[in-house]
Figure 1 (spheres, rainbow over the protein chains, first blue to last red):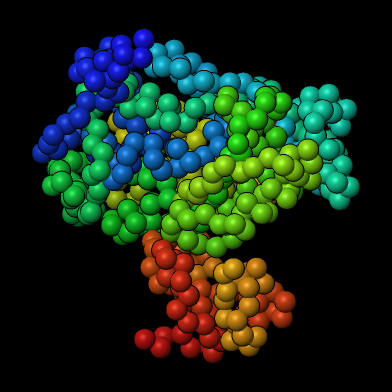
Figure 2 (cartoon, rainbow over the protein chains, first blue to last red):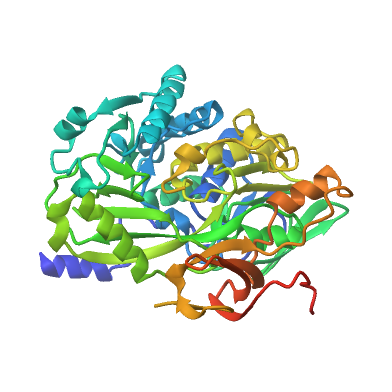
Length: 413
Length: 88
């Protein structure tokens, strides 16, 4: 058997074809150029080809596919947001996610776990009730639960958090799930590739050619491409791209760190989030605890990670789960989160004709991957903002019409 | 441990400080159009570079300016705000 395995490994004939075609040369002209080969960019390429029949598309990725925030998040999918626009948008995403494995013929390990957002104060309980009512009204499964319910579902948790921040209750969101994030990017990439989209890795956009307020093409590290439409889906690199076309945005880049423990026996089958303790945690299929916190407290354009972060996060983890005191942290990393003042994304058309933006995804972008692909492909194909993203338009700041998603977007704000 | 130098209190651990965001010149509220005002309130120079920023020494309440490279996270210099920022 080992010999057969070795022969198989050395053979050039593999039953599984590679996930994507490697193209030697950039084309001269494309109908749409997508900057950023993460989940969002590849999903937009996939839906452009599948839903709108636009196949002369290329995706340019300066590094490798899914190597940015797509591969750095803690893989949580949920739709229990606060504003009706937010809930409708993310609910569409959860529904798309649920069928995605079938769509791609690729196992995303989509796993519905149930999602608890813990409330440690009266005011947090009030926000949970508000969110639950908004959610229920829009048909999203979401309810406020008491300590007994939490105790039954997560018996390992110290509900008093060592006595200093006792849990009053929680918002329980049954459809809350986790999924394998790289597979989401690969699935969209393969689906787009099969439909004729060309994907280029290690290809960086260095300039965007704009004349008379209209996009004409892009300069890349591998040559010039002429195109009337550019979609920017680059998360933490967004300000570098918007600077190329002279658009000002409120986006500020702050690192978001995460870490995993060594694999341990399965004991946590739900997703636990505590805004007050700045923790979210779930257990992966491999048994690792996947944990994250709030963004670093100031602007940095790099993916360095710090001891401060692991110290702070693990201290709060021990408040909730004291029995983990001998569990070791195995790896830590960071992504560059593109934060906005109202904790909502910036999506759609811009003052530059043919330049579309899918950004401001801060710490909440992974769960929105499918719906972003769907709505941005519509927006690019029709040169008109999709109705689900109108509330996220860039001009909302100028119009003083911000969204109010701060209470539900993330932790610790 | 990361350190930052407060112009009044000297070099202190970063944990004692709070970031106050990018320094921006406020337009005259009487003269500015709504669009200019919204630009001042919301928009930022988001791309990496050496930026002037507000920092606050939490323990003593001192606000000051730091010039920091936001890509390498290195502080080049810190000084008190004097009301005049266009020194270069």
